[in-house]
Image (tube, rainbow, N blue to C red):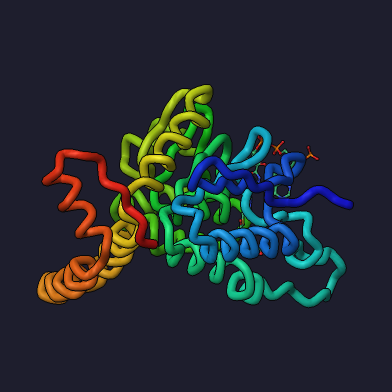
Length: 267
Ligand code: T3D
């Protein structure tokens, strides 16, 4: 039997998913898409999982679309019909972004090496991105005549502002992890050797927090990017009403008043 293209492991309430095509820098085939989506669905539906970590096996995080895949590689035969890349995006990459952005638990990207093309934006879709110092982010699309996908056009300007976003996307240059952290593209850059422990500690911390409040915070912040202040204030009131009715709020306040650590259970 062939090896899974997404490896899974559990540590307490944290599930780690590792993209596993190291010889091709974990670039996406349709099979890897299917396995990743299936694992994300499993994690989403499993109440014992309170945080997901996404990483890559080997020296890369993910090099984006597998450019050797006959489904997308241009056919060199003169007169051959072009491949429908729009279909690839709407069938695979767009649902992947939607799945990640609607996960019922926080998702941490542990970027262990190069993250290029759709691989870069896959990482940036996650709630917190921590990268090893030797990692880099490359909006490789323009280098091969494409536009950013996997949410890049939406994410980049929101993360680093329109001027930097356009420069990063137009030039497609390698952005080292340290620079990515400095300009606010990612949460943190750490020494390579410290990446696994740093990501694990971050994920354990998130797993022990009130999951519903974390997820509602993600959704509210994303929604507020496209609304006016009055709409954002109304949404905050709606969400706070919802949070106020949940067990985690009662537990949080009780624990604070009793000067003990809270035990959050809602999901
Ligand atoms: O097409 C559609 O469906 C539309 C959707 C598009 C989404 C996208 O992601 S488009 C962008 C696709 N990705 C890229 O353009 C990145 C291509 N890769 C690179 O530019 C470089 O490999 C890296 C900068 C990522 C890393 O460079 P380096 O020097 O560290 O490694 P390398 O030697 O280039 O690659 C190592 C191996 O991985 C090599 O194979 P080999 O020669 O050892 O057998 C290389 O071919 C393979 N590899 C790397 N990236 C890909 C890949 N194989 C297939 N597809 C890749 N994307």
